[in-house]
Length: 99
Image (cartoon, rainbow, N blue to C red; front, side, top):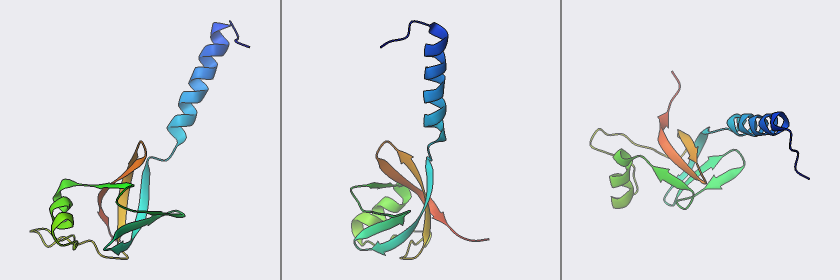
C-alpha cells in the first residue's frame, strides 16, 4: 500500500540514501597468489573475473604475471592491496605497506 504523504515518502527516500552511503566502498585485501592472480578480501577469494587493476600494472599482468613495471614495482603473494568496489568489480588501486 502506497503512502500519499510526501513527507513520509521523502523520509523513506532519505533513509535509503543514508543506508547505501554506509556500505563499504574501499577494501583492504591480501594477494593470495600471483599466478593465477587471487586476492583474499574478508572471507572471499577474488580472481580475475572479480578484479580490475590500474593501468601501470596491467602490462606486467599481460606479459609475465610478475607485476613488475619499469620502476621495479612488484606485487607478490602476501602483499596488501587497497581496492575500490565499483558495482560488482573490485578495482585494485595500489599496494599498501606499513610505515
